Length: 221
Ligand code: CA
Image 1 (cartoon, rainbow, N blue to C red):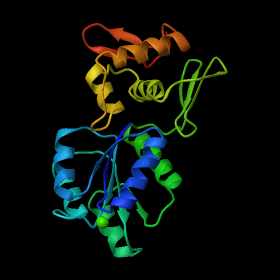
Image 2 (cartoon, helix red, strand yellow; image 1 turned 90 degrees about the vertical axis):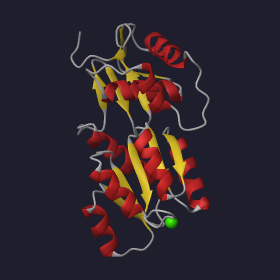
Image 3 (cartoon, rainbow, N blue to C red; image 1 turned 180 degrees about the vertical axis):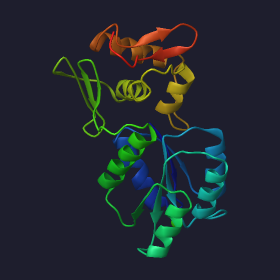
């Protein structure tokens, strides 16, 4: 689950980034509006955390351009002051949610999980498939009623495949969801994670679509 964080306050940005990484998100962090615009044009994100007061291009302008380009990515705005007109303007410009600074990191993580769920047309907080249950908030997985220990990356691969059940995700698409900027990607990393998931869960759960990628079918069997 890859997030774009747009925040020019170094201390705050650093804290938010650390909190999101700890919650298992991959994070790209930009500190001005133009850099955010470039990132959004070139990468695909599960959600954007957008400060409004930014150098070079304001958060409102970034948001307006994003929506004008018909990019549907969920956006949560951070407003510095608890002023109603700010929030109304942000929501009317296409933001999906907002938080007023100072805010609780746990609440930010929970709101992002909710936005990502809605962005994937999923109402239920738990993801289930046959006897598999994945809880994004607790970051836990169980299979046939017993808990299964997964690494952070294994969890992220499984989460992405479940959110996209019935659709094939290519290796490149999965890598994009797993890694932020500057993170080393080993060439066969995705294959290794899938291999581990099959061993820990079930060999049949994740299908390989030759030459295309991986998928978890929508229906059982
Ligand atoms: Ca700011």
